[in-house]
Figure 1 (cartoon, rainbow, N blue to C red):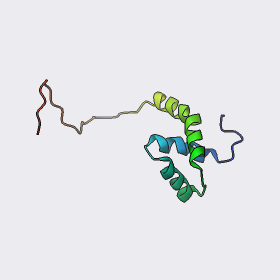
Figure 2: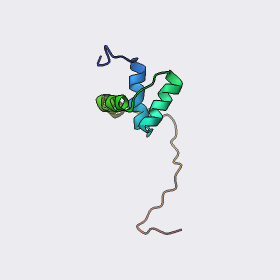
Figure 3: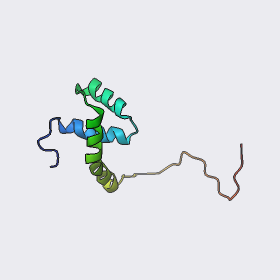
Length: 87
């Protein structure tokens, strides 16, 4: 695997690209890892991991097929037509 011989546990390394993809800033990721895992990370380390391992997350999401069972209900209202009304 690509995560051999790293200074940090692989769970910490893989959490950072996930949190970054969820929209957290580097400082919020740093604070989250510090508070929940006890590891202090520099922003440059987080950004390095995001750049290095983002392809793993992208490949995983590309191959992810959600299983839908039963009925699917839409939660949005869909209007058909060409005109758009201002409310």
